[in-house]
Length: 328
Length: 288
Image 1 (cartoon, chains in turn brown, yellow):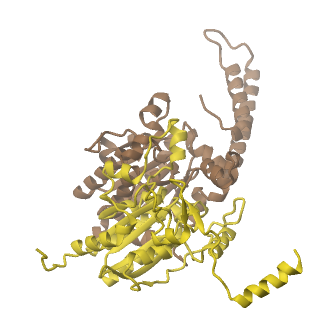
Image 2: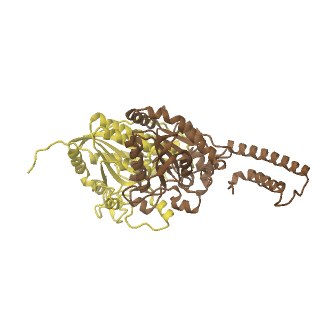
Image 3: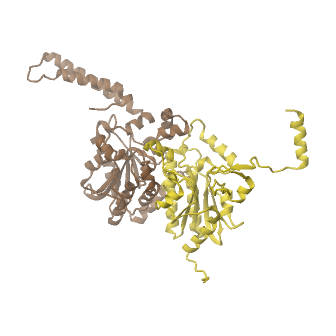
């Protein structure tokens, strides 16, 4: 069952109608067609017309999504998540687990595998896609052990000269008593530190929601890509609204003010490339979205792999130091 | 209002000469509720003489308390883009900045100076909580990077006093990007083989804690400072539990292995001096 967002209603109505017509024109089980040939041709025409209308509507809607609508699309339950990307793009994938000091945090997934035949380390935040997996992955909200697992993977990659691919999709780091007690802030800081110090290329892709510190912990890379309708923000629009407007209902205004869309962030040169999504968003055609990400990674990886570690690190430092510097 | 108050009184006051009377002669301690004479409080480094509660400190005081008397020079920090997002909530961000500048006489939420601490050269960066809750925007990031560069240039250790409510929301993702930027600053000091000491003061939260504030070679905090990533209110709303007493306070963090020491304000200069001396490997004549 496809899940529709509020603003997709006109499309939803058209598509329901199409489904009804399809059902009508299909031959009933074991019997002959109830209507004549001519009738079924008419229905076929009608379906084609409606389909065209639905596509047009979808194209129009997605061509000018508001920031708040993008927030909803980025969080869409049927959007491909980190493990979907890993399963599709990585062959010979071997998941690795644990931070070697406390636990294995399932909110952060990762391991070793091959991308286009080349050995790589992958790491990502996974939200889960049904109740069971969401609980298992804690909705993509990592605890310190998750970031420490990421540090382990980044250091492993460094030791063996493997490039790192990261897939970021998280509402943010988990704000819990246990997480704080075990040093959530320190774990995030170390993860950023490890990414920036890595002697191997890091390519980070924000595939859904890039939630603040929990996202940058895995996204301080040489190249940062973002899906067309993904968002990346210093704070959720909901929380921003309650703090600055002292009113939780201003999330729409906050989403606009925060400039959290891929298009805005490309404009500010905080992300390098935008990955196009299939018509109607990645959730309509996950395979196409994953393919597009794969293509961009394929283009970007070889030249980065040519750089020696010190040149790579120097370039990475310069990239971040330029962000927010006057005149850049 | 009569001419007596509007005209005669100021006249007489002028004749007598200006008297510098502070608005609040008395302060109430937030912790033990005792009334403290303002001058006494200041003399006691803004620490309550009754219960030892460490109140907030202004950056200028902090510099005076940290460096050897008259030894420090403040440096001018690089300018950062102002209001890159054109942010506006109920108020324009540019207006907020203007208000804060007028109120605090500071340009931004960071001040950097160099001088000596018990005779040892040091670069000290102090975050100003009084300026927009010490939030981290591009200017703060530039300031931390400038402090790190100065430390490397002078071959001096870097000491940072943190106090922050977290990210500067009004700068959106540019604010978030200060986390990697300030981390790079720490790496520059580390690469030069110089000590980096963090002193966390009340409160240090959010993106500041989750970047340069937790990467010190030595981690110090003032007593009972609130230190964490998520704020207590956010945590309470998420887990729907009342937080335990002393949660996210310095002593709690020390118990959980996140801090080397909790140091009272009166002992801070001496402690910093000893650390810098020891890590700087300068031999001293053995007193024994």
